[in-house]
Amino acid sequence: MEDKDLARALATVEVDTSLNSQMKIKINEISAQAKNFTVVDKESYDNAAAKINTLNSFSKKIKEFYKVPKEKAANAWKAALDAKQAVSEQEKNWLNPINESKEHLKREQGAYTQRLLRIQQEKEREAQRKAYEETKKREEEAKFLAEKEAKARGLSAEEVKPVEVVIAKPEPVAAIEIPTKSITTLYEISNIDISKLPAVYAGEELVSPKVAVIKRLIKEYNSTHSSLLKIPGVEYKVIAKAR
Image 1: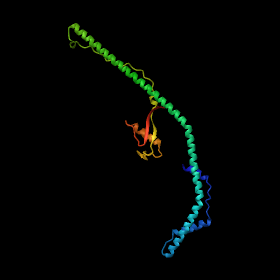
Image 2: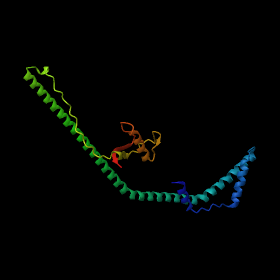
Image 3: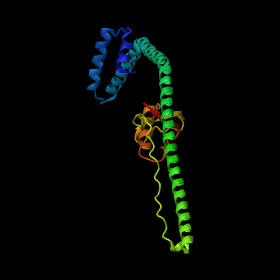
Image 4: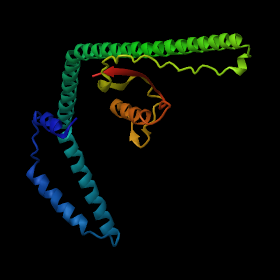
């Protein structure tokens, strides 16, 4: 709870902070004497003991006086915490369907983008396959013509200059408009085992646990490494999404 929340909670507790004025005066007197008191003999020793008993008596009375106000303040604090939790749950209930809908739409965008990429790659592979087949066809034609020429001239195939074969180039594939710039890689944490989660990891505090910190660590590491970051007690999956 924030300090201002606690202040508002405590403001609802009416506490009579006035003590018996004579008791206050007596406490101040004894406290002042005690600060400058020195035990030098049996009499001063006994006098110190008497002052300690008096101060203990005052301590008991003060604790009894503030027992009820402290209980009221504690109850008010708990009520404020409960109220804050209830409001947070209401907010979560409103936001959940919105967030779930957004996540579904983003997944659909990501899946669509992936389909376009696969189609583009398939077209490029098909163009390369056709170019390869065309080259093979030209090579077979050149070999056939060389053999015919050699036979007609009474020469061996090796004695005839081979026909130059022009390697076929793949037909240009029309680029599909793919929203690659809007694609981002996100990491969805599916489970956190608190018993295995370190309190501090890579200099970051993970207690509570701090899901945002965990996601940031994963993103920072995975964006610069070929392997995926492994945090004890954390399970997550990689999702390509379009924004």
